[in-house]
Image (tube, rainbow, N blue to C red; front, side, top):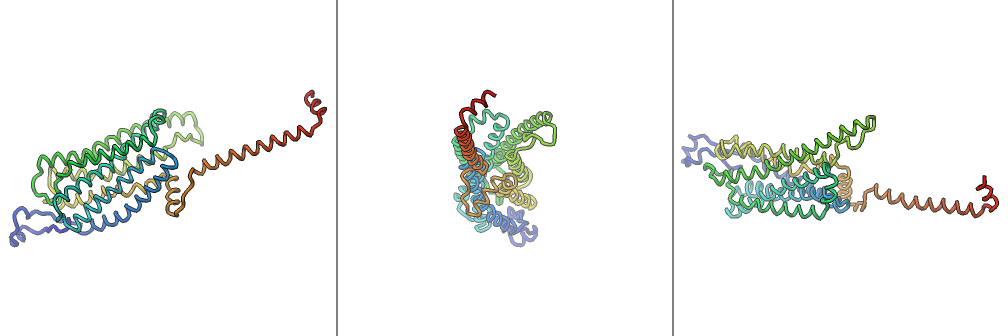
Length: 364
């Protein structure tokens, strides 16, 4: 990624290089990707660990499946940062320049693709859960609970690992100067289908149905309640806004890499064209940015998440229940005490009143 020369043909002929080495593309960005990935790793891993701690507190406190799915997405992002950014881009490419045993190189590729698939497909059950919750609320109460969410997450992680096994034979795009084989074509199309086309199709269909359902309800409620105070259903829920933000950011950041990979397959390879090499570098940098932005989306949308993050940063344990629930529970005993006091005062007044006065009051 860094050490590929880019000399003229005459210069290569003077040095006596082989013909297949004449068109090796140079990494135009130089050491910029190394600096970028180092910063992304130093920021992304601590931020995702903080997100995981905050989401685990919210999951144990509220028992909502939403936080379990978000926790799975965060854990998969951490694995992607460790395997893809740290091991793949920094250790293998920048430090060893791919001069590692072939078996180790292919084994790391399996881990990279498995983590990548888990990071993307962990968002799919979250989208399905939000669709069922908004469009079929009665069904959501029956089928959505933490135990089932954990089973779904385990199945997604297991399938992600299995889907990464064929990529043991993934060819090195950075150094492969030969035309793509049938195996390369199969793996590349399988890759872009798994990481982009299928999940984006699911996101698009379910999010469209969610938006349509919310707009329909908005028209109905806003027609019934015309006035300065709108109904809460006329507004986009924070959970839905968070889901739309996550899927939209994924759609935008992963689109360039998908296009460049297909272009590399049919038009020009990274090995021979420095422009494709540059586009591939930039698209990878954008795609990996997706593993570190969810924390800021959660903070921007969710107030409970911000409060829990503040408690974690300040090393506070946090309340076991939300403040509203505590205030309600404190209000009930106060109400019972006041009712008891009022009952006692009424009873004392009755006892102090003479019997003749009580009869006259009843007769009157």
